[in-house]
Image (cartoon, rainbow, N blue to C red; front, side, top):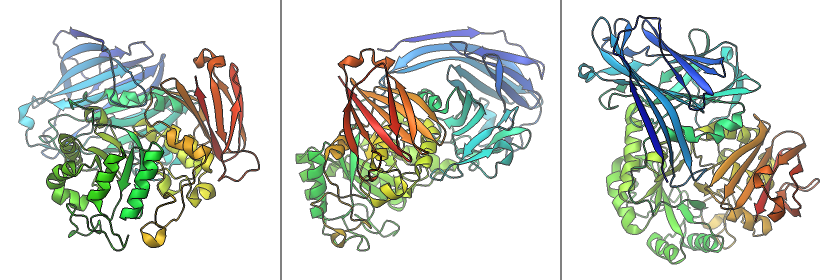
Amino acid sequence: MKKTIILLTALLQSVFVSAQTTGSLKSPSELLNAEIDVKDQSVQISLYEKGSKVVDVKTLQLELAENILQGNWSVINQTKKSVDQTWQPIYGERSLVTDRYNELKLSFRLDENLKEMTLFVRLYDEGLAFRYAFDNLDFWNCTLTEENTQFLFKEDCKTWVTGMAQGAYSEKRLSSLTGAADRPQVIQINDHRFVAIGEAALVDYSRMKLEKSETGLGVQSVLSGKVNLDLAKYQSPWRYVMVAEHPGKLVEHNYFVLNLNEPNQIANTSWIKPGQVLREVTLTTAGSLACIDFAAENNIAYVLFDAGWYGAEEDMKSDATTVTIDPARSKGPLDLPEVIKYAESKGVGILVYVNKKALHRQLDEILPLYKKWGIKGVKYGFVNVGDQYATAWLHQAVRKAAKYELMVDIHDEYRPTGYSRTYPNLLTQEGIRGDEESPSLDQAIYTLYNRMICGAGDYTNCYFAERVTEKMGGRAAQLAKLVAIYSPWQFVYWYDRPEKSPSRAGGAGSAESVIKTDGATKFYNSIPTVWDDTRFMDGKMGEYAVVARRSGSDWYISILNAGDKRQVTLPLDFLKDTSACEATLYYQAPGKKKDVVSIKTIKLQSSLVLDVEANSGCLLHLTR
């Protein structure tokens, strides 16, 4: 059921004097308000929450290679619009999304050369968004070299940054920032106000990163290359500032980023199916059949064939239309057609990895071929990201995959900006410091509070690998991370293989950890990958997080604790009737090894107090 209310208000056409307040906006529930001022050669948007200033944004400080933007901006027209609607995602962290905002459209002219532009400013209860568009056809074949949008704060705020999409997070002050940070970037204004700065609907433009502002305390945009405005269809991606009282609420409200993207463009989406994924690590027929049997027995939807199945991934001679095992990874043999046929008989889908070298040479050949083979999806490996042409090529590759009903996972440095709403065959992507990097538990929590604002993250979960107990909080924490860190495709055993799979001597893979089936493992395999509702209940940046997600009538409450032993109180009023619930806790018991998950049934009351061991986690499963 979709409800849409749109109100348009055309204001008198007039030219406003520079430095005069041009327009104002309030969010639908009047939680936020913004004042928009023309400031000679820029436009300033001042954002307020409940009357207190949050940030000053200075934009339209553009530089073009042709140096045609000379003079001061004047407003020649403004129009207001209000939208109140809901939409149902194909999959996601909630089954219904509310999209409510008020928008101000400002038309500008440069007073010396009559060039015209449009600035769109939207105010949601969740935050501010703006984009600019070039209207005058005289801009054809122009190249944008700098954007110079600044986000300025009154105080030297605390912030968390990483220089690369798969890098570790560190805590900084705005005054001590160095280099360019990936987005979104979370900034703490005070104990009860956090903001996230990022971009949405990056489709055919150069990626934005954020670096220390040249003037004042704050950050400013830096583009990862020049922008051909013709290729960009004469408009920028959305730039946004989300506002919340807790960093967890920024993540809870991440539908905001999806709302800034175009609606679904795929008419028939019945073939788009989320689920858990098991990586086949031996590249052998025997290992493949063992994985398929295990997947079918444990409700795992897919088996992935990673690098090496069509040859050495970095070798330009490797042909992704053939099954040619890389001898450095496996001795084989691998009969992939027979494996795909067997998987189909078991109700398991097959996914394959293809490196960018083959993708760039063979994309138009392999996509229809893989559809013919019966493959369900492709992981695009080590793709180029950042500059405009890499960005445009990659999103075109997603659209091409949709034509052949192939789902996509993007490897390495790509971070989402909401395109999965427009093309939901883009199920997930990395751009995340996942388990294959062996992150400490505090880094996993930083990832949750920062990276997960922008969308799904392929976290390459481990479970039985030794690194889990040595560095990553143990198996109880892995259960909790599977719920806390969202991805429609969850790679659940990145380094682990079924017992019937060949050992290391019989295939690739540097680890020999074997999946052992017990009560905790069976539960791990049953955890959903998409949700009907998501709520952040409690937590602190880098220390702990409490996330509740609902699938149907079941609730999964995840707790991650990177610090000392902690007592966590869970209010359960959202359940309404706790007497009708059965509660099972999967946890790290005191004195037990981290490779052991303890299980117990507990009785619920109006609130629940749980003791969580240091550097560990737990997961509470509530059923009716």
